[in-house]
Image (cartoon, rainbow, N blue to C red; front, side):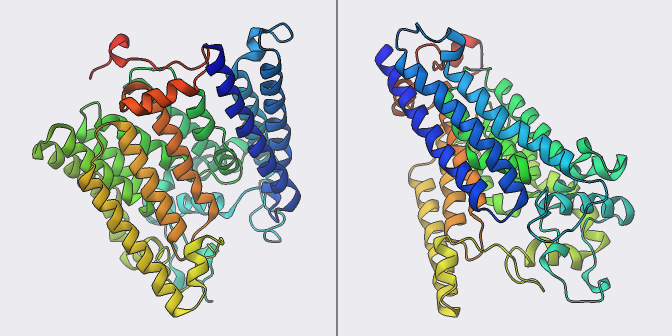
Length: 436
Protein backbone atom coordinates (compact mmCIF):
# COMPACT_ATOMS: atom_id res chain seq x y z
CA UNK A 1 0.00 0.00 0.00
CA UNK A 2 2.81 2.41 0.88
CA UNK A 3 4.52 1.71 -2.46
CA UNK A 4 1.36 2.46 -4.46
CA UNK A 5 0.85 5.63 -2.42
CA UNK A 6 4.36 6.82 -3.24
CA UNK A 7 3.83 6.02 -6.91
CA UNK A 8 0.65 8.12 -6.87
CA UNK A 9 2.52 11.00 -5.24
CA UNK A 10 5.16 10.87 -7.95
CA UNK A 11 2.40 11.26 -10.52
CA UNK A 12 1.05 14.18 -8.48
CA UNK A 13 4.45 15.83 -8.48
CA UNK A 14 4.73 15.50 -12.25
CA UNK A 15 1.23 16.96 -12.67
CA UNK A 16 2.00 19.99 -10.49
CA UNK A 17 5.36 20.62 -12.13
CA UNK A 18 3.84 20.56 -15.64
CA UNK A 19 1.05 22.84 -14.41
CA UNK A 20 3.65 25.13 -12.85
CA UNK A 21 5.50 25.45 -16.16
CA UNK A 22 2.24 26.22 -17.97
CA UNK A 23 1.28 28.89 -15.43
CA UNK A 24 4.72 30.51 -15.41
CA UNK A 25 4.83 30.62 -19.21
CA UNK A 26 1.35 32.18 -19.26
CA UNK A 27 2.38 34.84 -16.75
CA UNK A 28 5.52 35.67 -18.70
CA UNK A 29 4.41 35.53 -22.31
CA UNK A 30 0.63 35.90 -22.66
CA UNK A 31 -0.62 39.06 -24.36
CA UNK A 32 -3.85 38.97 -22.37
CA UNK A 33 -4.07 40.85 -19.08
CA UNK A 34 -6.39 38.32 -17.44
CA UNK A 35 -4.17 35.44 -18.49
CA UNK A 36 -1.12 37.10 -16.94
CA UNK A 37 -2.96 37.75 -13.68
CA UNK A 38 -4.03 34.12 -13.59
CA UNK A 39 -0.52 32.96 -14.42
CA UNK A 40 1.03 34.88 -11.52
CA UNK A 41 -1.31 33.42 -8.91
CA UNK A 42 -1.36 29.97 -10.49
CA UNK A 43 2.45 29.83 -10.47
CA UNK A 44 2.40 30.30 -6.71
CA UNK A 45 -0.43 27.79 -6.28
CA UNK A 46 1.13 24.99 -8.30
CA UNK A 47 4.57 25.67 -6.78
CA UNK A 48 3.18 25.28 -3.26
CA UNK A 49 1.23 22.16 -4.28
CA UNK A 50 4.41 20.68 -5.79
CA UNK A 51 6.35 21.53 -2.64
CA UNK A 52 3.78 19.82 -0.40
CA UNK A 53 3.84 16.78 -2.66
CA UNK A 54 7.64 16.71 -2.68
CA UNK A 55 7.82 16.92 1.10
CA UNK A 56 5.26 14.12 1.27
CA UNK A 57 7.52 11.97 -0.88
CA UNK A 58 10.56 12.72 1.26
CA UNK A 59 8.84 12.11 4.60
CA UNK A 60 7.66 8.60 3.86
CA UNK A 61 6.93 7.76 7.50
CA UNK A 62 5.48 11.19 8.18
CA UNK A 63 7.88 12.58 10.84
CA UNK A 64 8.23 16.04 9.32
CA UNK A 65 4.70 16.79 8.08
CA UNK A 66 1.35 16.37 9.80
CA UNK A 67 -1.16 13.94 8.34
CA UNK A 68 -3.23 16.85 7.02
CA UNK A 69 -0.28 18.36 5.14
CA UNK A 70 0.75 14.98 3.78
CA UNK A 71 -2.72 14.32 2.38
CA UNK A 72 -2.84 14.49 -1.40
CA UNK A 73 -6.08 16.44 -1.08
CA UNK A 74 -4.27 19.28 0.69
CA UNK A 75 -2.20 19.94 -2.42
CA UNK A 76 -5.40 19.80 -4.52
CA UNK A 77 -7.05 22.37 -2.24
CA UNK A 78 -4.03 24.69 -2.31
CA UNK A 79 -3.86 24.59 -6.11
CA UNK A 80 -7.60 25.14 -6.42
CA UNK A 81 -7.53 28.12 -4.06
CA UNK A 82 -4.47 29.96 -5.37
CA UNK A 83 -4.80 29.03 -9.06
CA UNK A 84 -8.58 29.22 -9.23
CA UNK A 85 -10.55 31.07 -6.57
CA UNK A 86 -8.07 33.89 -5.87
CA UNK A 87 -7.39 34.98 -9.48
CA UNK A 88 -11.12 34.79 -10.26
CA UNK A 89 -11.88 37.12 -7.34
CA UNK A 90 -9.05 39.49 -8.28
CA UNK A 91 -10.24 39.76 -11.88
CA UNK A 92 -13.92 40.30 -11.08
CA UNK A 93 -13.09 43.00 -8.52
CA UNK A 94 -10.57 44.51 -10.93
CA UNK A 95 -13.31 44.92 -13.52
CA UNK A 96 -14.61 48.50 -13.24
CA UNK A 97 -18.42 48.84 -13.36
CA UNK A 98 -18.29 51.07 -16.44
CA UNK A 99 -15.60 49.12 -18.27
CA UNK A 100 -16.62 47.48 -21.51
CA UNK A 101 -14.01 47.60 -24.25
CA UNK A 102 -10.43 48.69 -23.74
CA UNK A 103 -7.21 48.52 -25.72
CA UNK A 104 -7.74 44.98 -26.92
CA UNK A 105 -6.40 42.64 -25.68
CA UNK A 106 -4.01 44.06 -23.12
CA UNK A 107 -6.43 45.66 -20.67
CA UNK A 108 -9.12 42.98 -20.44
CA UNK A 109 -9.93 41.78 -16.88
CA UNK A 110 -12.21 39.26 -18.62
CA UNK A 111 -12.32 37.67 -22.04
CA UNK A 112 -14.98 38.94 -24.49
CA UNK A 113 -17.08 35.82 -23.88
CA UNK A 114 -18.09 37.30 -20.51
CA UNK A 115 -19.38 40.57 -21.96
CA UNK A 116 -21.03 38.81 -24.87
CA UNK A 117 -23.08 36.58 -22.54
CA UNK A 118 -24.02 39.54 -20.34
CA UNK A 119 -25.00 41.59 -23.40
CA UNK A 120 -27.12 38.70 -24.66
CA UNK A 121 -29.11 38.73 -21.42
CA UNK A 122 -29.73 42.49 -21.72
CA UNK A 123 -30.91 42.04 -25.31
CA UNK A 124 -33.16 39.14 -24.35
CA UNK A 125 -34.92 41.18 -21.67
CA UNK A 126 -35.23 44.21 -23.95
CA UNK A 127 -36.09 42.62 -27.29
CA UNK A 128 -36.96 38.97 -26.70
CA UNK A 129 -33.82 37.69 -28.46
CA UNK A 130 -30.18 37.58 -27.34
CA UNK A 131 -28.96 38.11 -30.91
CA UNK A 132 -28.35 41.67 -32.14
CA UNK A 133 -29.51 42.61 -35.63
CA UNK A 134 -26.24 43.19 -37.47
CA UNK A 135 -27.99 45.27 -40.13
CA UNK A 136 -28.56 47.99 -37.52
CA UNK A 137 -24.86 48.46 -36.79
CA UNK A 138 -24.29 50.86 -39.68
CA UNK A 139 -20.94 49.22 -40.39
CA UNK A 140 -19.42 45.88 -41.23
CA UNK A 141 -19.78 43.47 -38.27
CA UNK A 142 -16.74 42.20 -36.41
CA UNK A 143 -16.43 39.14 -34.14
CA UNK A 144 -17.29 41.03 -30.95
CA UNK A 145 -20.73 41.80 -32.38
CA UNK A 146 -21.66 38.12 -32.46
CA UNK A 147 -23.29 35.92 -29.84
CA UNK A 148 -22.20 32.45 -31.03
CA UNK A 149 -24.07 30.59 -28.28
CA UNK A 150 -27.47 29.02 -27.99
CA UNK A 151 -30.21 30.72 -25.97
CA UNK A 152 -29.51 28.71 -22.78
CA UNK A 153 -26.15 30.43 -22.33
CA UNK A 154 -28.00 33.71 -21.83
CA UNK A 155 -29.07 32.60 -18.34
CA UNK A 156 -25.59 33.26 -16.99
CA UNK A 157 -25.78 36.91 -17.98
CA UNK A 158 -29.09 37.54 -16.23
CA UNK A 159 -27.63 38.50 -12.81
CA UNK A 160 -25.86 41.51 -14.33
CA UNK A 161 -28.81 42.40 -16.56
CA UNK A 162 -31.24 42.28 -13.62
CA UNK A 163 -29.15 43.64 -10.74
CA UNK A 164 -26.63 45.89 -12.45
CA UNK A 165 -22.85 46.04 -12.51
CA UNK A 166 -21.07 44.47 -9.57
CA UNK A 167 -18.42 41.95 -8.72
CA UNK A 168 -20.80 39.10 -7.99
CA UNK A 169 -23.08 39.76 -10.95
CA UNK A 170 -20.13 38.97 -13.24
CA UNK A 171 -21.09 36.09 -15.54
CA UNK A 172 -17.99 34.18 -14.43
CA UNK A 173 -19.46 33.87 -10.94
CA UNK A 174 -22.65 32.41 -12.41
CA UNK A 175 -20.60 30.01 -14.55
CA UNK A 176 -18.57 28.83 -11.54
CA UNK A 177 -21.51 28.47 -9.15
CA UNK A 178 -23.62 26.61 -11.71
CA UNK A 179 -20.72 24.26 -12.52
CA UNK A 180 -20.22 23.35 -8.87
CA UNK A 181 -23.94 22.79 -8.27
CA UNK A 182 -24.30 20.61 -11.39
CA UNK A 183 -21.31 18.45 -10.42
CA UNK A 184 -22.64 18.09 -6.87
CA UNK A 185 -25.96 16.90 -8.34
CA UNK A 186 -24.18 14.39 -10.58
CA UNK A 187 -22.13 13.26 -7.57
CA UNK A 188 -25.33 12.65 -5.57
CA UNK A 189 -26.97 10.76 -8.46
CA UNK A 190 -23.97 8.43 -8.63
CA UNK A 191 -24.29 7.57 -4.92
CA UNK A 192 -21.76 10.02 -3.42
CA UNK A 193 -18.66 7.92 -4.13
CA UNK A 194 -15.11 8.70 -3.08
CA UNK A 195 -13.53 10.85 -5.79
CA UNK A 196 -10.04 9.77 -6.93
CA UNK A 197 -7.41 12.49 -6.62
CA UNK A 198 -6.45 12.02 -10.28
CA UNK A 199 -10.03 12.78 -11.29
CA UNK A 200 -10.01 16.04 -9.35
CA UNK A 201 -6.65 16.99 -10.80
CA UNK A 202 -7.68 16.57 -14.43
CA UNK A 203 -11.25 17.83 -14.12
CA UNK A 204 -11.08 20.54 -11.47
CA UNK A 205 -7.59 21.94 -10.94
CA UNK A 206 -5.80 21.47 -14.26
CA UNK A 207 -4.43 24.71 -15.73
CA UNK A 208 -6.97 24.65 -18.55
CA UNK A 209 -9.91 24.35 -16.14
CA UNK A 210 -8.75 27.04 -13.72
CA UNK A 211 -7.60 29.44 -16.43
CA UNK A 212 -10.98 29.07 -18.13
CA UNK A 213 -12.78 29.73 -14.83
CA UNK A 214 -10.77 32.87 -14.13
CA UNK A 215 -10.93 34.63 -17.50
CA UNK A 216 -14.07 33.30 -19.23
CA UNK A 217 -15.87 30.31 -17.73
CA UNK A 218 -18.52 29.63 -20.35
CA UNK A 219 -17.25 26.14 -21.21
CA UNK A 220 -17.36 24.82 -17.64
CA UNK A 221 -21.13 24.46 -17.14
CA UNK A 222 -21.35 22.76 -20.54
CA UNK A 223 -18.83 20.14 -19.38
CA UNK A 224 -20.64 19.76 -16.06
CA UNK A 225 -23.97 19.19 -17.83
CA UNK A 226 -22.37 16.49 -20.01
CA UNK A 227 -21.23 14.74 -16.82
CA UNK A 228 -24.69 15.11 -15.30
CA UNK A 229 -26.38 13.73 -18.42
CA UNK A 230 -24.03 10.73 -18.39
CA UNK A 231 -24.85 10.04 -14.75
CA UNK A 232 -28.58 10.23 -15.49
CA UNK A 233 -28.27 7.82 -18.42
CA UNK A 234 -26.61 5.16 -16.27
CA UNK A 235 -29.03 5.65 -13.39
CA UNK A 236 -31.92 4.79 -15.72
CA UNK A 237 -33.38 8.27 -16.24
CA UNK A 238 -33.32 8.75 -20.02
CA UNK A 239 -35.98 11.46 -20.05
CA UNK A 240 -34.10 13.72 -17.66
CA UNK A 241 -30.85 12.92 -19.46
CA UNK A 242 -32.50 14.14 -22.67
CA UNK A 243 -33.56 17.39 -21.01
CA UNK A 244 -30.00 17.98 -19.76
CA UNK A 245 -28.63 17.25 -23.24
CA UNK A 246 -31.04 19.87 -24.59
CA UNK A 247 -29.45 22.40 -22.24
CA UNK A 248 -26.02 21.33 -23.48
CA UNK A 249 -26.72 21.73 -27.20
CA UNK A 250 -28.70 24.95 -26.69
CA UNK A 251 -25.64 26.40 -25.00
CA UNK A 252 -23.05 25.29 -27.56
CA UNK A 253 -23.73 23.34 -30.74
CA UNK A 254 -20.13 22.15 -30.65
CA UNK A 255 -21.21 19.75 -27.89
CA UNK A 256 -23.41 17.76 -30.30
CA UNK A 257 -21.00 14.76 -30.28
CA UNK A 258 -21.90 14.23 -26.62
CA UNK A 259 -25.56 13.89 -27.58
CA UNK A 260 -24.71 11.23 -30.19
CA UNK A 261 -22.61 9.18 -27.76
CA UNK A 262 -25.23 9.34 -25.01
CA UNK A 263 -27.99 8.32 -27.44
CA UNK A 264 -26.02 5.16 -28.21
CA UNK A 265 -25.40 4.64 -24.49
CA UNK A 266 -29.12 4.92 -23.70
CA UNK A 267 -30.00 2.22 -26.23
CA UNK A 268 -27.13 -0.11 -25.34
CA UNK A 269 -27.84 0.05 -21.61
CA UNK A 270 -31.06 -2.01 -21.81
CA UNK A 271 -31.51 -2.55 -25.58
CA UNK A 272 -34.88 -0.79 -25.46
CA UNK A 273 -36.06 1.43 -28.29
CA UNK A 274 -38.51 3.00 -25.83
CA UNK A 275 -35.64 4.34 -23.71
CA UNK A 276 -34.01 5.86 -26.77
CA UNK A 277 -37.32 7.42 -27.81
CA UNK A 278 -37.78 8.93 -24.35
CA UNK A 279 -34.24 10.31 -24.42
CA UNK A 280 -34.52 11.83 -27.89
CA UNK A 281 -38.04 13.04 -27.18
CA UNK A 282 -36.88 14.80 -24.03
CA UNK A 283 -34.02 16.39 -25.94
CA UNK A 284 -36.21 17.60 -28.82
CA UNK A 285 -39.04 18.84 -26.61
CA UNK A 286 -36.79 20.76 -24.23
CA UNK A 287 -34.77 22.18 -27.13
CA UNK A 288 -37.95 23.40 -28.80
CA UNK A 289 -39.15 25.09 -25.62
CA UNK A 290 -35.82 26.92 -25.35
CA UNK A 291 -35.15 27.77 -28.99
CA UNK A 292 -38.52 28.38 -30.67
CA UNK A 293 -39.51 31.55 -28.75
CA UNK A 294 -36.16 33.19 -29.55
CA UNK A 295 -36.11 31.94 -33.13
CA UNK A 296 -39.55 33.39 -33.85
CA UNK A 297 -38.45 36.90 -32.83
CA UNK A 298 -35.68 37.09 -35.43
CA UNK A 299 -34.96 33.89 -37.41
CA UNK A 300 -32.27 35.53 -39.57
CA UNK A 301 -30.32 36.75 -36.55
CA UNK A 302 -30.51 33.32 -34.89
CA UNK A 303 -29.15 31.58 -37.98
CA UNK A 304 -26.38 34.17 -38.50
CA UNK A 305 -25.14 34.09 -34.89
CA UNK A 306 -25.64 30.47 -33.86
CA UNK A 307 -25.12 28.52 -37.10
CA UNK A 308 -23.33 30.51 -39.79
CA UNK A 309 -20.76 32.34 -37.69
CA UNK A 310 -19.43 29.29 -35.76
CA UNK A 311 -19.29 27.39 -39.07
CA UNK A 312 -17.12 30.11 -40.61
CA UNK A 313 -19.88 31.22 -42.98
CA UNK A 314 -20.93 34.42 -41.22
CA UNK A 315 -20.47 38.01 -42.33
CA UNK A 316 -17.41 38.26 -40.08
CA UNK A 317 -14.67 35.70 -39.68
CA UNK A 318 -14.05 33.90 -36.42
CA UNK A 319 -10.91 34.96 -34.51
CA UNK A 320 -10.35 31.35 -33.41
CA UNK A 321 -6.94 30.61 -34.87
CA UNK A 322 -4.87 28.55 -32.46
CA UNK A 323 -2.08 26.64 -34.24
CA UNK A 324 -3.64 23.21 -33.90
CA UNK A 325 -3.32 20.73 -36.81
CA UNK A 326 -6.68 21.48 -38.44
CA UNK A 327 -6.07 25.22 -38.51
CA UNK A 328 -2.49 24.85 -39.74
CA UNK A 329 -3.65 22.66 -42.63
CA UNK A 330 -6.52 25.04 -43.44
CA UNK A 331 -4.03 27.92 -43.67
CA UNK A 332 -2.49 26.33 -46.77
CA UNK A 333 -5.34 27.73 -48.86
CA UNK A 334 -8.59 26.35 -50.32
CA UNK A 335 -7.06 22.92 -50.80
CA UNK A 336 -5.78 22.93 -47.23
CA UNK A 337 -9.21 23.95 -45.94
CA UNK A 338 -10.80 21.10 -47.90
CA UNK A 339 -8.21 18.65 -46.57
CA UNK A 340 -8.90 19.80 -43.00
CA UNK A 341 -12.63 19.23 -43.45
CA UNK A 342 -11.96 15.84 -45.06
CA UNK A 343 -9.80 14.77 -42.13
CA UNK A 344 -12.54 15.89 -39.77
CA UNK A 345 -15.09 13.82 -41.72
CA UNK A 346 -12.83 10.75 -41.69
CA UNK A 347 -12.28 11.11 -37.95
CA UNK A 348 -16.04 11.37 -37.42
CA UNK A 349 -16.58 8.15 -39.40
CA UNK A 350 -13.92 6.37 -37.34
CA UNK A 351 -15.54 7.46 -34.08
CA UNK A 352 -18.98 6.39 -35.33
CA UNK A 353 -17.51 2.99 -36.23
CA UNK A 354 -16.00 2.80 -32.74
CA UNK A 355 -19.43 3.51 -31.22
CA UNK A 356 -21.02 0.78 -33.33
CA UNK A 357 -18.34 -1.88 -32.81
CA UNK A 358 -17.60 -1.05 -29.16
CA UNK A 359 -20.60 0.84 -27.77
CA UNK A 360 -20.17 2.29 -24.26
CA UNK A 361 -21.29 -0.13 -21.55
CA UNK A 362 -20.72 2.10 -18.52
CA UNK A 363 -20.42 5.83 -17.69
CA UNK A 364 -16.63 5.74 -17.86
CA UNK A 365 -16.73 4.31 -21.37
CA UNK A 366 -19.30 6.87 -22.51
CA UNK A 367 -17.29 9.76 -21.08
CA UNK A 368 -14.13 8.48 -22.74
CA UNK A 369 -15.85 8.41 -26.14
CA UNK A 370 -17.24 11.92 -25.65
CA UNK A 371 -13.78 13.17 -24.69
CA UNK A 372 -12.21 11.57 -27.77
CA UNK A 373 -14.93 12.88 -30.09
CA UNK A 374 -14.73 16.45 -28.80
CA UNK A 375 -10.93 16.40 -28.63
CA UNK A 376 -10.66 15.16 -32.19
CA UNK A 377 -13.07 17.83 -33.44
CA UNK A 378 -11.11 20.55 -31.63
CA UNK A 379 -7.77 19.41 -33.00
CA UNK A 380 -8.91 18.99 -36.61
CA UNK A 381 -11.35 21.91 -36.96
CA UNK A 382 -10.20 24.62 -39.41
CA UNK A 383 -10.92 27.35 -36.83
CA UNK A 384 -10.32 26.47 -33.21
CA UNK A 385 -8.80 27.58 -29.90
CA UNK A 386 -6.39 25.57 -27.77
CA UNK A 387 -8.43 26.54 -24.70
CA UNK A 388 -11.22 24.26 -25.93
CA UNK A 389 -8.98 21.34 -24.99
CA UNK A 390 -10.43 21.83 -21.51
CA UNK A 391 -13.30 19.64 -22.77
CA UNK A 392 -11.39 16.39 -23.35
CA UNK A 393 -9.08 16.96 -20.38
CA UNK A 394 -11.90 17.59 -17.89
CA UNK A 395 -13.95 14.74 -19.32
CA UNK A 396 -11.01 12.36 -18.90
CA UNK A 397 -11.00 13.38 -15.25
CA UNK A 398 -14.73 12.61 -15.10
CA UNK A 399 -14.00 9.24 -16.73
CA UNK A 400 -11.60 8.38 -13.89
CA UNK A 401 -14.26 9.38 -11.40
CA UNK A 402 -16.93 7.28 -13.11
CA UNK A 403 -14.53 4.32 -13.31
CA UNK A 404 -14.24 4.33 -9.51
CA UNK A 405 -17.96 3.57 -9.16
CA UNK A 406 -18.61 1.22 -12.04
CA UNK A 407 -16.05 1.22 -14.81
CA UNK A 408 -14.68 -1.81 -16.59
CA UNK A 409 -12.35 -4.06 -14.64
CA UNK A 410 -9.16 -2.75 -16.31
CA UNK A 411 -10.18 0.85 -15.54
CA UNK A 412 -10.82 -0.01 -11.89
CA UNK A 413 -7.46 -1.75 -11.61
CA UNK A 414 -5.70 1.25 -13.14
CA UNK A 415 -7.43 3.61 -10.70
CA UNK A 416 -6.45 1.53 -7.70
CA UNK A 417 -2.89 1.25 -8.90
CA UNK A 418 -2.51 5.02 -8.82
CA UNK A 419 -4.56 5.73 -5.69
CA UNK A 420 -3.05 6.57 -2.35
CA UNK A 421 -4.03 4.40 0.65
CA UNK A 422 -5.82 7.19 2.53
CA UNK A 423 -6.69 9.64 -0.17
CA UNK A 424 -8.73 7.98 -2.92
CA UNK A 425 -10.26 4.54 -2.70
CA UNK A 426 -12.51 3.07 -5.36
CA UNK A 427 -15.94 2.44 -3.89
CA UNK A 428 -18.41 -0.28 -4.80
CA UNK A 429 -21.68 1.58 -5.41
CA UNK A 430 -23.69 -1.33 -4.03
CA UNK A 431 -22.11 -0.79 -0.60
CA UNK A 432 -23.41 2.79 -0.58
CA UNK A 433 -26.96 1.87 -1.44
CA UNK A 434 -26.95 3.19 -5.00
CA UNK A 435 -28.94 1.53 -7.76
CA UNK A 436 -27.14 -0.72 -10.28
